[in-house]
Length: 490
Image 1 (cartoon, rainbow, N blue to C red):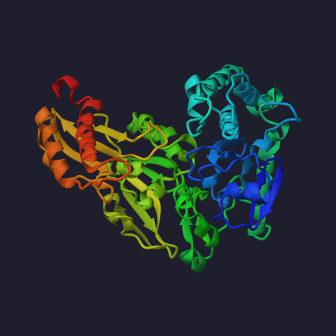
Image 2 (image 1 turned 30 degrees about the vertical axis):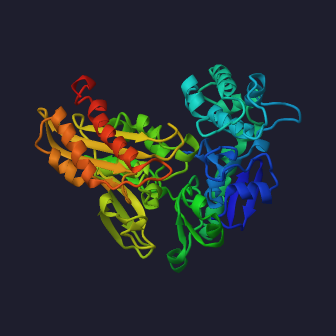
Image 3 (image 1 turned 60 degrees about the vertical axis):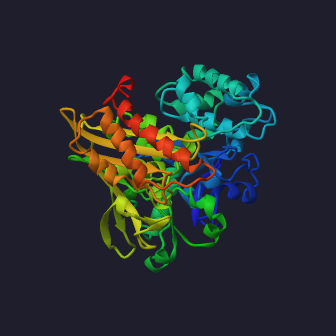
């Protein structure tokens, strides 16, 4: 049975774990403030807040998520907040709602709830509110009426208000100011009690050894072998929502042993359910890839990054998976495990056989990703071109890792997406760069050889000729963005 708090109410439900949080909220709890829009995570009309206890169990950390792509099972042990859960007395607006009204940020109103929830999540964040972070918090919300400037003004208005938020007892201050109701202050204790009770029930009443970790419903081995593996749900709930509702699922998102980012010597190691947002915020990764925030800002939107897992992006097997392309150039290896306890390691580049065809069995899951940390003198870059800069699928994406010594390329890896049936590692092109000086002639050689390795097709994201031209230009961009060459040399 799934257990979680929905606004101020404890929920216990036997609804399928693979169904969507959106449908549960609207059709089973009749909370219609959360809207149904695209059902693909693009519009943000269904945005809710999902809070879980931090490692110490002292506070609840909230994230904005699109409920249309959130598996109901991923709400287990957490606090889900819809717009009904932040509303004060009838007729009273929260400061977020008031700012949107004051700045003329709502017309038809359909998208408004999503903006309200995203900005409320921003107010609940531990991080200092800045004009940049306020705008970033609504990067997953689309409005087709207002032209956005009024919503941007509302976000800036809130930034000024949130400058007064204290670092300690922030939730108490937010409740006093009307951003959230007073019951938010009780949620750490409520979730801790929920976890302790569930763990005690699972262990026959024995004392909880780690009460701040939510117990995850686990299938027995035979059932798990037949179940669909489900992480963040950002891909499968777009493609197969009805099948997931009707099929047993093995939930991975909440399993603590599959989370986290650490460094061991010169290796960086990630758990399979590490999210894209956790990559962006990781001090370990920022130390070895300082430009990572710039790259990941091109990957989807904040709510989707907070849900989508690295392993899910790999197993999706999209020829233009952004994280796949990035980690291919890093030379990543993946750890695969079965329910029966079998383990093996595989280079990420060897995972893909053909379009949506993988070298893994159905019951294998990616439990770990590891790669050698680039040194301070290595050059690394990621590029992506899509019809929209943000919240869009790439037409072509590519990454490059170059180890350069005294102006000579000693090692190289180049990856490219959108130019073949699988995420490509451009092996021949990279091999030809080794031993060559960093020069215009070397760039031109790479561009020429890459054209022989790719096989793009014309589709809705561009013609074959356009994609070839994009990769040609982006390979040049790798050398410019890493400072190996300046534009005047090209």
